[in-house]
Image (tube, rainbow, N blue to C red):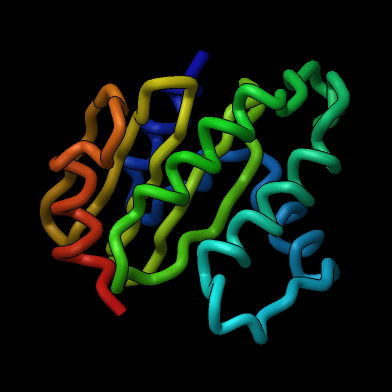
Length: 160
């Protein structure tokens, strides 16, 4: 239930469109939610999980986009939490959005044709990215650790 049309559009357009149709609304919502950013112990993973829980609550009902979007389920939240836990240290913090499929997406956008999105759907991660003149996309199964293809992209293009 991945929005393949949006992923394809992100790969072929001059400026990638957001994979999530509600990305602007989500960004505004998250700006207005308080997050504990002072925690040294938990750091960015804690912040991401706080945002994840806020999104899951906001998008927990069917049709949250007024067009029949599926609700973000507890199963989707658990898959996203696991994804956060296995992200490598030293990368830029992603932006999280809810997808109309009920899944959750992680986006890294540096502008200048440097963008990468990963949709976590159960045990799978669907990804697409534009890196200057090249692009990559694929689907990987997440066993216990981050698939090497996704990890390499993050460590190559999205280091802090």
